[in-house]
Amino acid sequence: MLELKEVCFTIQKDGEPVHLVNKASLAVPRGHFMAIVGPSGCGKTTLLKTIAGLNPESEGSLWWDGRNLSEEGDLEPWEIGYVPQFSIAYDELTVDEAVEAATRLRVKSRNLEDLDQRIDRVLEETGLAPIADRHIKVLSGGQKRRLGLAMELVSDPKLLLCDEVTTGLDPRSEREIVHLLHDLSRNDGRTVILVTHSLAHLQLYDSILVNHEGSVAYHGPPGQLTHYFSVDDSEEVYPALAKQTGEEWQESWAKHRVAYYRKLERTRELHIETGVIKLPASEESTGEEDEQATKKKKKNKTAPLRLPSTFSQFGTLLTRRWKIFFRDRTQVLLQVAILLCFPILVTFFAERGKEPIKRLSDIPEENIVLELQSRVEVREDQIRVGAAVSGMIMFEVILLALMGSNNAAREVSGERKIMEKEKFSGVRPVSYLLSKLAFLTCLILAQSLWMAMFVEFFWQFSGSFVSHVSFLILVNASITAICLAISSIMKTPEQSSLLSIYLVGFQLPLSGAVLALPEFFENLTQPFVSAYWAWSGSIDALGGNIHTAVDVITETELSPGNICFFALCAQTMVGIIAAWMGMVRHQWDN
Image 1 (spheres, rainbow, N blue to C red):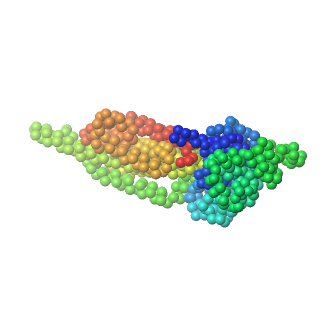
Image 2: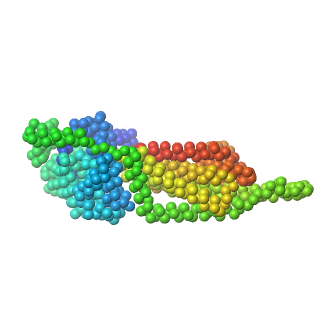
């Protein structure tokens, strides 16, 4: 039994409270199929999200089987299923793979046989078994809605909430979905609530709730809908609603609901208590029925489903991410093109960077003119080679920063809705974070190591090659982590991509490697510029004449390698922590 008692959901608008859900009171029995209908913008989805726990109630209380959810916590993830308006599956997967991933993320299976049986049962129940091997991107709208239902049914939820799952479908597909939901409500006492603007197929619903301006205008048998609103056809209900405010309709309904509930009582064998629908009292049931219900209730209590472990969810998410990556040809080709082309661009500087720098000791000091001439030649060599080496290293750093931005700019924001939905279904944010870090780490290592080895083949790095590689890995990691954080915090993929581009774009001018910055500004910005620390650390790793030559061409002070190392590590950690905070934060509506 689901009950709402004077539930409100209130927001502040221009300093004034606005009740998006206004003192909603109703009860929905087990095995009941209810539709929430109303004109656009009347608060149907808001009411459904309040029932789901996505919108915290401002007043009143929600009850489930005698448990006060407002005080004792939300329903367990396996108890509730929520099918949103948007698709909750990846186009690159097949139907079977999407359902399997949902099962592995939400249900701890005893063994593979138990997992396969659960998947097969859900596919059969939703009519998807014949197209289990079909990719999601080629499914019709109705098939995608069935898939959304299948991914929720893997945990056998007792409360199934569906938000506009029939919107945009052709009449046949809409009829099939409504029939499917009706059948699902008859399985194991499952309560099904559907938000829809359509008033078709009313005969399949056990009750209809009409919402208007956040208020309950009617909740009763579908056959009495036209009678209550004094209209000849159900299509005339919405125009009739406009004749009064939501609060006026709610006050009117409070006066008449008992009479309409009695009619609903006769059709569904319910009884009324204080104007709210109730299930039949246990003493009115036969002894055998009561005993069977008690046994079933005990069985459900003693054998609740369990969520998979954090590590298990991490493995499922990582496997799915790699599968999606390799099936996205555009992304694979882009990564290959970047991996091959960027190092080639760097090697254009290699020849000048290999030129030797003359030393004063190499020139015989015969007279003052020759000595001055040798000093000029040494200075010219230092400027020429120093500029080439500094430019080549900075070019490496900036290109790896671009790779890092490309790696993570849309990694979370591009799948925000799916992530939020799976968090609601019991997927732990830490599992998401770890799967993203593992996936991105592989890209970082492949990109950075290939860049370093390719450049080394054309230009023998005169200093510590290991140190140079370390700084290339770290600058890629720091930019990737920061862009992952941006992707986790921003509302849309477009916003996160734009901000990530700006982040990389300002790396070069703010690093001080090309243009000297005012000292006060340099001290302010350098701690946050990854390119500076990677460039400075790599130059320090060169040592000797190269270090001196680079120092000649720039007024920016070079930092010791160990300080650069810790600065990049700190930036990476800050990015990971910020990404974690963004993943934990609720952003369902984004």
